[in-house]
Length: 181
Image (cartoon, rainbow, N blue to C red):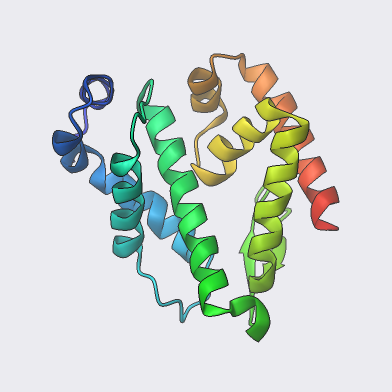
């Protein structure tokens, strides 16, 4: 991967979306693979298809701009999440039930098991969290969905590491409450 952080940021700011994909593809593929690992084994979408669909949505958005690399990857991760939710609703997984999947909202030693039918419920809980506390929702999207570290999240949001930790603690507790866990 020839990803130079500065080069990605420069391309994002210049709007040269054709040159962007080769630089970000491997990282988008990693994010997609992580998202797909949370899905059921017989899922009909593949990580590659998820990357392509998310990228198409991102570049087709009129007027979409990204301030820097972390912002782009957070937006891409959010697009992937929405695609998976739309796909789940489309194929009716909520009606068919299915196995549980592991979703970690916190430390690795405190995983939360969510069934397939709860993917839409998680989406709804994130919408409520965003209405209640935009910054906590932003931290959640970057930490949980994009997989950024505390330090990367702080940099992306231009807030302190301590603020990220505080918002992340609140967001996890609120999501547990909203999900009834």
